[in-house]
Image (cartoon, rainbow, N blue to C red; front, side):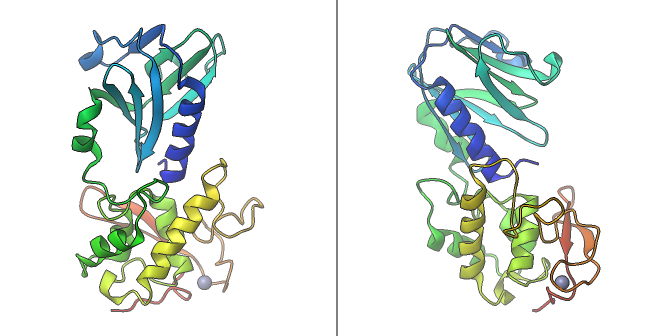
Length: 260
Ligand SMILES: [Zn+2]
């Protein structure tokens, strides 16, 4: 599942590849947009908001894409061979020199003036110009009984934390992911850490939360089968989250005692 840093990097690729260029082809390969066409429009920019990508055109239209579980954007010189199967392409944007292909993305077209209807519910974006730690803290504290693991993932509180960062942040903050928000010893530090981790990883493809980029050492607990890198205890894994939205959570029972 792409996290905020991956979405940010995708937005940057699209922004650098397409901004200021006029589309010669737009091809939307989903039934609801099969007849839509924005060719002739000039791309004015792409930004990320949480896990959404907003690509804006000078005709007042915005293409919103979401990477969901497997989605990815490739941006390359025209004529480059695709690295994903053609049938998984959902949107193709071409200019005289560049091609951008969104594979397995969710997409729609909206009026640029209505973007807020799509992303207005999101909390402050950890990598956005609107980042505001106080607002994020206020939103987190509004539901004091929510398990911190769920609260960090809830994009209405703060936008950009995915399942990997959720586990890693709880480890670094030394809290069991089931700890209620109200019992987290230092919530501001946890939020500040989220900002630091995403900033540190936003321009690279490997995700390092430990400061050690060697294979097998990049994350403290997420996806880890071996012993805890800090204390040697066996890392635990369990599904966490509201019914129907459970995601695997990893934690060290020794380093992360349950409180509250
Ligand atoms: Zn440990």
